[in-house]
Length: 112
Length: 112
Image (cartoon, each protein chain N blue to C red):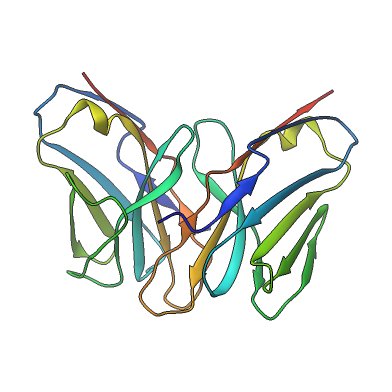
């Protein structure tokens, strides 16, 4: 079962603009993470937000979490061409013995 | 730095062949995972393991098996490949109780 669903599926912006991606999930979670994948490569962890947190920052990244709506958003500020990649949210459920479940991803294209 | 190494970046196999995809991590992680990634479907969990000789089915285990004889190595086995197993296969590992996962570079398998 796919836990996270990202929205939009694809996003095209100009350098310097902000990019916002959203993720919705279905069950209670311990944490929500965002990962980045450059074309044809493995995923790289960007940021984690715990279920008792509402907002977190890391450099140009800002993540929010609304557990009442079961949703999260990733904001990339002042985007660069190098931010072009696919972005995935991943959740781990509160019950023990489960693995990370990923959404389908948002493909971000930043043009100069 | 954590390193997760997948044995091949690209593989081409004929229908019916047996395929072993190897994954090795060098940070003594307890958890290891195999995902497949297909366009429009995101990452789907095939199998995961929390310890040596332990395995748990993910969302799409049919047609696959796994082996974990040593802590650092997690193998994905395709007993008799079919064309619908053409995909990108991603291995990941994480520490027990730590949600951040580290990914290998992926193996792009083509079955002809």
